[in-house]
Image (cartoon, rainbow, N blue to C red; front, side, top):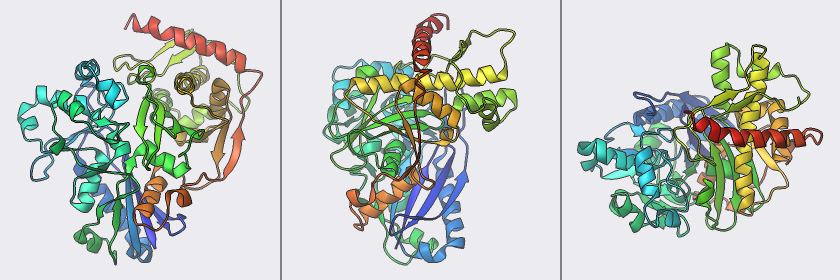
Length: 484
């Protein structure tokens, strides 16, 4: 028996094949790009996702035909909030408007100020969420809006491609501003506030439940012998939580990817929209999660890399191993706006304290510290809702820098643990959802916390200095906001 986890990302798709114990067999990737036709716009043609999946499956089939033939379950993890609009024949009407698209800020503000919206959805209506995107389409592309029969998130669109059915899970749907997150169901009141109807929404299932069966034509095309169950799937962060075993109270992770995430698993529903935390359904029943989101984490380091001509790895390597005292140079990592705690799509990044003596190393240190301070905003907000952590698991590409992890641990004042080498991300979480949906394992059996290989402790000698640095960082935002 084998299972497939599909991680549908913003820049590419990864397909992970695992065996009956959840051990990776092989993976394949295919990359694509987003389009940015105007300032603040970010779009993607869903056909790119379908083509990427075909490429990945053909690659897996060429090298691991026997394992693929024995496939029993598939789970899809997708980047959240994207608006994929279909007509009554299931045809895509326009490019998908992605999570990092900010064109609908005014529509988001209007929806957020509508009575009852925060109370029912459990969240601020951010510009990146799905509901304000549809309001933008209604106001700016009325001919397209009139043809909308279904609105699907990226993962739900992939489920549609795989099964022929319109079906989505609660963890992904919680980021639309149309879901009653506490009740885990579409809200007619929220839909009405956004000028949408329940019949335009996909059918809802839990992420670990069956959404449907793989289409026979795809099964035959990919060389699969028997029926394959497709799981409800998950939003990317919920899937990552399933991959790392973050299901229960007290367990959380910090993810250093393009965006930065600090996530806490919650056993109950505890919305706190005033903090700009996201409160979403988990991908498994009777669980929720809360997370703080910053829009530019490794993206901040990648930006510095692009203007200095040095790779991110070379930039961080130049700082050495020993943790430096907090810099007097400050970096605000708001290159694409910010969610937690500011809910500000218009704010932009800044350096303060530059001098003629400032070096690339100084700027690198400030960027790493600025991202760490941004994560501290989310950490404080989570603790304010009652979340507690003895440690946090560190994942994502940025976790390869031990220096950066030492900064974050010292800024947060909590140890960071590193999983032993192996799979533990969204693709593995999606494969685990496929396994549970197929009925071959329970959530508790398959979604445990992996073994940890190392722990990064806060530096007690520098924690007070970083606390002062964080206070200065917090004071800089309103000052920069006032002149932008």
